[in-house]
Amino acid sequence: MTSLAAPTPGPTRSDVGGRHEHFGPIVRPAVEPTFQERWQARTFGLMMFLSGTVDRNGDAFRETLEQLPADEYFAGYYQSWLATIERRLEEGGWIAEGEVDACLAGDLGPSGVRRSRPSLAERMLARSLPLAMRPLPPWAIHLMLRTFQYSRPAPRRARFRAGDEVRVVARRPPGFTRLPGYTCGCRGRIAYVHGAMVFPDTNARGLGEDPQHLYTIAFDARELWGDEAERHASVCVDLFESYLEVDSP
Amino acid sequence: MTERDPRRALRVEALESLLVEKGLVDRKTIDRIVEHYETNVGPLNGAKVIARAWVDQAYKTRLLQNGSKAIAELGFGGPQGEHLVVVENCPGVHNVIACTLCSCYPWPVLGLPPSWYKSPEYRARIVREPRKVLAEMGLDLASEVEIRVWDSSAEVRYMVLPERPPGSETLGEEELALLVSRDAMIGVGRARTPGAPESDAP
Image 1 (cartoon, each protein chain N blue to C red):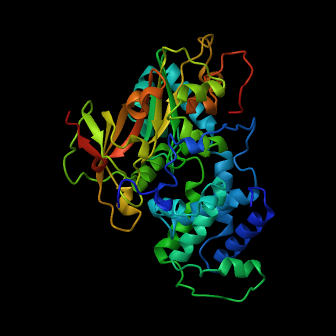
Image 2: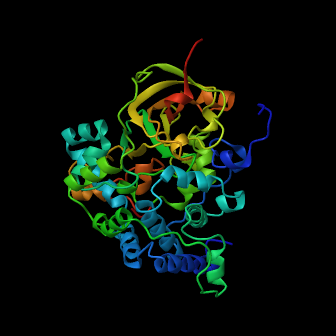
């Protein structure tokens, strides 16, 4: 790979921050229901159900989403979710490629590979899902937050402290990453230290949780955008430790 | 295909039927999930949190120190709310939230994000020209006010604690909550002044 290489289609698709090709009017409907269409609600419900049972890796879901062809990725939020759900189910062996199309074509017979049924644990999770779908007492919320949070015991001490000056690495790591491209090479100051969390870049690819310290870095707008920056503006971005270097002047 | 294309509806229905047949999902649970997000999870939750912070200094301190924990005191929490950080507006500083890489949003307090928040246009522009975007959205800020944009690209979700509006000094918590719109908690608007017309449905 050279630095002059054109952006690869998959990994950079979602990296829209600051990019002029996406500039345009922001259209705000006066009133917007939670779901504009019923199919959007069903897609949301399906995704939530599966993310609680057989497809619990949210990072892997995002990675698949970002690998969609551009027309599907930018086609609309729930449309891209639907395409992602189908791909995830195919990759997991829960449905066969083309099985949904076969259903739509009226071919109702069983087709393709059919993996074994969900495990007992997955079925129990599915049964307990409705219990969480109501207003809960604070103790239940604490329990849920503790069970599903991304915080992990820190494998090593945090390299940086609040107030430290740091520099973001010059390039985005290849493949799935949570490093917004517009921060690359820029200097910033640590605003928050959040502790160690699951590292999405490895977790998305099934390479383990590899917990890393997460920080919020405050960047002066001029550092990010140069002379065209607006005055009195800053951007605070959540970045993992491996995206950062000690700022050596 | 557009969002309104009937083929979308058919496709979701086919997929759902297939998964029900395979014993992977259960329709009633999906109904329950949808209903929960349509009725229990929305910006009214966040508005109650903000109103509490306005009237109770000790609560506000806890909220700014540990968002998720203080928000759970009022009975709100769940997916996309594991690490909530509340950022406070003051006369010299205005905060606004975004997610440039996807559409991360504090669901338990604001509900599901509006379509414009998820649009590539908002995601691309808000980090680069926030003052211009806010002005377009009807929020003109004095040039000396510092704008802080929070790009929640990883696991943290942000919510803005707007300034308490003038003329609200005598109001109680419930009345105050009615002044807090979703847009004010995203940071693309202000809390409504008592008596002023609602700018957006909360």
